[in-house]
Amino acid sequence: MTSEKHQKKIAVIHDLSGYGRCSLTVALPILSALKVQCCPVPTSILSNHTGFSTYFFDDYTEKMPLYVEQWKKLDLTFDGIYSGFLGSEEQIGIVIDMIKDFGTPETTVLVDPIMGDHGKAYQTYTEKMCSRMKELVGFGDIVTPNLTEACILTGREYRPEGWKRSELLAMAEEIMGMGPAFVVITGVREGSYVTNVVAEKGRETRFLRSLHVGTERPGTGDVFSSILAAEAVKGLPLTDAVKKAARFVKACILKSDQLHVPVKNGVCFEEILSLLIGK
Image (cartoon, rainbow, N blue to C red; front, side, top):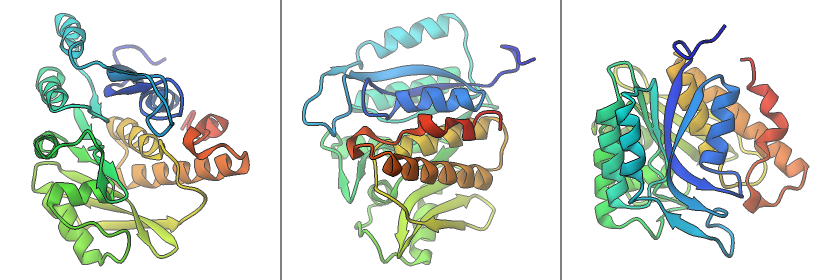
């Protein structure tokens, strides 16, 4: 039987959007399906994600230290710490402190530097926040930027396609130079394929590609990173975890298109969550 002592647990620092399938509402079921305990730290509370025309938003910055302080009193440690969307420079500092306070030499830290998409930084991301994110990246073991975020981190000009693999390799190596041992640049378009660039210190970089399918949807990055975080603390090699995450995201997109799920509603991973359970 799995006991509290032996079951893996991950502190997941992310926003909570009640509708739209992203962030914590993705991480909780995905980690649970993979037999990992998800311990949420909300950065903000939203009625639904910001891709909708209207939403309620409650910034949790002031509450986060009070929340985390109780965990410190309980002397908690975690097998993994996974950070996602952060709404302010102050929150980045809080996450860095959490890594110092709750991490051990055995803790795997995954940083998903959610800063932008389609070549543009999100409105909340100032130059100071982007600079501070580089500092947080330095505390990560695994970092999972999309192409836009990789360009922001390295100061490169974004272009949606036409990247030489030597350029992608150089970009991944520059991010590894900030501190992490593993970098996965996600969702690079190569013609009719989507490629994930998997870089690891001391090993040859791999370019894992699959045929592009369906409609691009919000929340797929959260599904991908959640699977990586869970499998990392369980000891699965990163390349295998990336393959597993990419296959599942692809299946989610196809199922969502099949069921005519509105794009803003994300991917209906619930329909195929059984693909992850028990594996």
